[in-house]
Image (cartoon, rainbow, N blue to C red; front, side, top):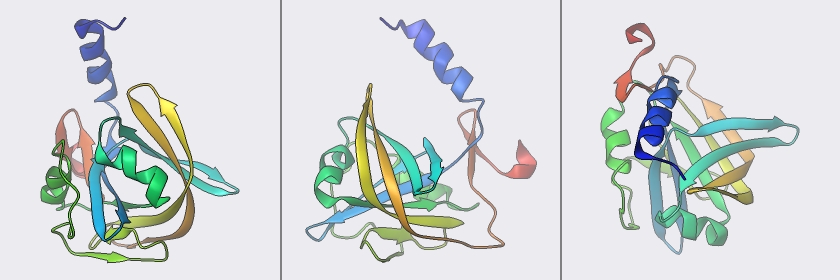
Length: 163
């Protein structure tokens, strides 16, 4: 059993890992879903696979097995407001994400102005405690060469110079 003290120590330790900030999105039956995710990583080069960790109880947990697609927009410096918008727990699915987006091959929306993006098909969904681990097969990927990343470190947005 996890105590509050050990959970807080765990959070503080992991908060010392500077992470990029992403928005994970999907679309199903003309409704779009999006959330801020910092638990994101590459998994494999052959085949091209990534992972994102999504809290259970989120709408995305229920829709990914049905939509079978998602996109990851790696936010750039200056997109803190977008990150905050999608970090709100319990947001309902919408017909429009409320930020400029565009679809690629899978139809999942990519956030405009992102430093990079990945368009994925769901390869596998794995139980990960209070999260699900979504493994995505990358269909398309791209990056803006001169974009600086949005980082999160010790409960604050940072830039590379500000760590």
